[in-house]
Length: 196
Image (tube, rainbow, N blue to C red):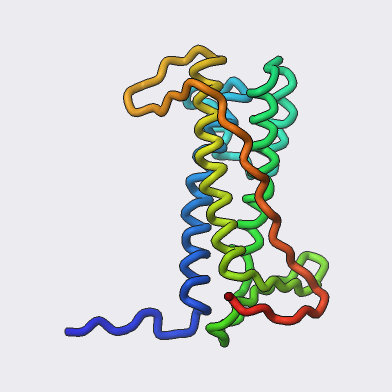
């Protein structure tokens, strides 16, 4: 018996919808890297750090890391790289929140139009190209890898923890990747861009 096409209702351009799914999956991975950075910067080893992390939103996590980092007394590169991660993490979760909390206009396969109503009652629109959506996903992947690298360097080289089997141990600090680009929403009328 042939499987029927799913979904039977309009969802938006296939490639854009796939990119949104990759963004969602990559964000979960980025949170894992953020957890490593959080527990190492705050010096909350073991289950306590994971317990605290799970009860905070991303804004509070970033604020706590930003405030705790100067007390660590780390010079560059670790301090500078940790601040870069925190800065990039903010852009990544803001992009993710904008996308995942938007409605999608589903009547076009040539463009994706997202809209949401802000707390002020204004409707805001975004019309990202496929390249921009993929870049959001790629930025999250880049900063997941960067965050894990920096977190593990802090753990093993500054905090003196011993790598366990399967841990990725690095022997040099990474280079700073470029910052992600924030997605723009606007309430101003703008021409619709196609996905190309």
